[in-house]
Image (tube, rainbow, N blue to C red; front, side):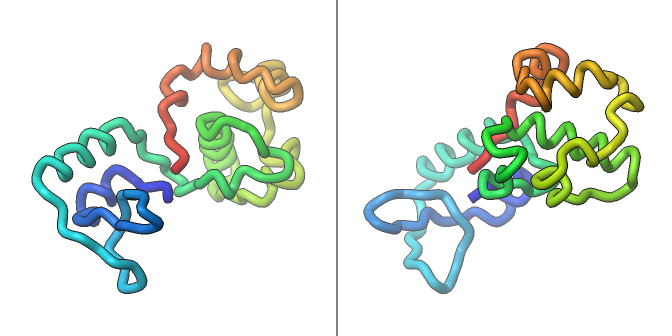
Length: 139
C-alpha cells in the first residue's frame, strides 16, 4: 500500500496483523486490528518520515506496459511535465504511448534529455539532474 505522509500521520493508528506479517495500514472492518504501543507507533512514524509524498498517488501496480520497470521518481517527474503543459494527467497515455504524453522539447530539460531517459532508459542521467526524485517510495 502506498501511503502519503500527510495521510499516514492522520490515519494510521493500528498495525494490521495478517498472515503473521506486520504491515502498517489503515483501519478496516475487514481485517483484525490490534492497538499498538507507543514504541511501535514511534517506530512507524520513523518509517513514515522516510517516505516522500507521491503527489499523484501512484503505486507499483501503475507501472505497466511502456513504463514498466521505470523508477517512480521518473514517472512522477514526467507527470508533472504533462500537467504543466496540458493542465491534466493521463496515466494511461504514459502506459500506452509514452512519446505522446507532452512536448519533450518544451521542457526545461529538453528533447535530448528525455529521449535518453525514456527511449534509452538512462535513469542515471535523470537522477543526476533530479536527485530529489530518488526518494519516492512505492509501497
